[in-house]
Amino acid sequence: MPYTNLHTQMKTQMKNYTAWFQNDEASKTYLVACDGISESHAQARAWIKFFDYEEFREDEDSWELETVELKG
Image 1 (cartoon, one colour):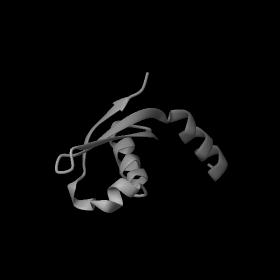
Image 2 (cartoon, rainbow, N blue to C red):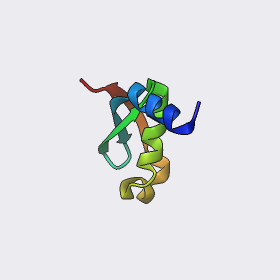
Image 3 (cartoon, helix red, strand yellow):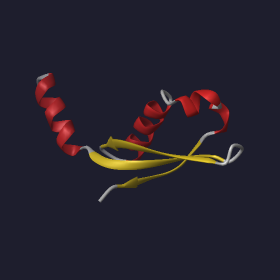
Image 4 (cartoon, rainbow, N blue to C red):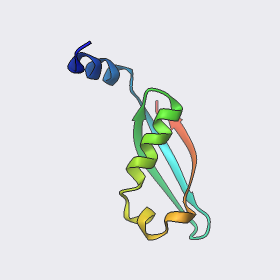
């Protein structure tokens, strides 16, 4: 299967999620919009996205992904 067809097929299977990150030491919560073909895929994509956020970079060891919820 050519890459473009596979890419198009994957996009149609992606679902929208909201990831909830918690930092108990700093009493902070951060919500991140992400997508994935499954909940575990969305969790991985949420972490990758969150790595770029300043809040994560300021305190990398204290953040936990509490939950990922399907939107809608």
